[in-house]
Length: 320
Image (tube, rainbow, N blue to C red; front, side, top):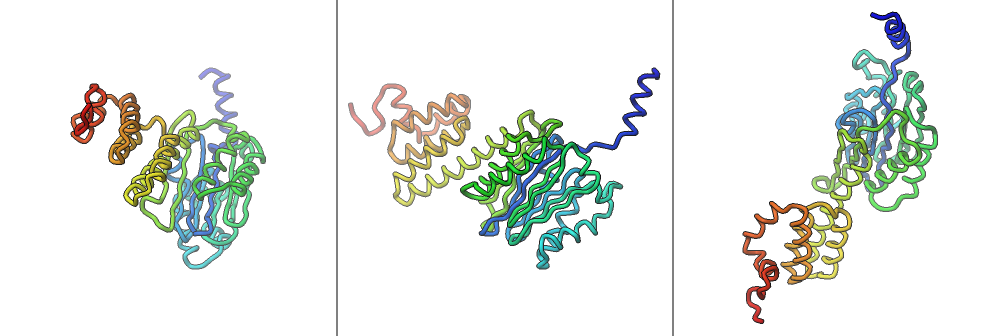
């Protein structure tokens, strides 16, 4: 080993370990839906750092994550403890996971009702910048950040945001990124919401590895919302509300303009509604995005009116 290499190695070993930076927001709304948004420069942050249960609460365990925190936290909250008392119990039961004590933890916890609670261990506080902000129904925490303005921007955007919990969480994490985000890079992001309705109303979106994780997460969120809008359009048509069906189809197209499946559904619903012009336009967009799938679809007799228009022939049942 060359002398200078050995000196660098010794110096590096003497330095405190710097965990990978993470920032997150967890919250519950008035209906007791609970969720979280998170971003980091580590892999697959949505698989381990955040968790939520409707009617119970939400948690983020970061800097050096302990995956057992969520189980204990939700058990405490279900027993009626406040977020603050539940967090104390979580830390007391940490168990030094992976031989790291609570000095390596940064944890945020919120109950379905009440003020959020957060903790930053002594090692977490040694990150480039680390801190927490809590309030009624939310907790925001981060480490390795550009500064306090990251968390402040997240709080302000969340508190002034409109719409469902998922929209407010997504806007908050984006505000943190715009305020400087992490100082050591970006790799993954996630958005999680557990609703009281459950099922398809829940949101669990993850970008596991990307140079632009939050931009990719926004795209996925748009696709989710587009899918919801198409569902509303189809229900509106079945209920005889053609105007609403049209509005929801337009919304879906705006939210996910590059998703072939959305344009296929718009084409099919437009045909069902008897709007051949819109169906043809939508099918053309679909074909441009996915020619192979469109070719398969053309073999379905359902599309005969569109095929006839493409060939210059009158649609079935229509004479020149």
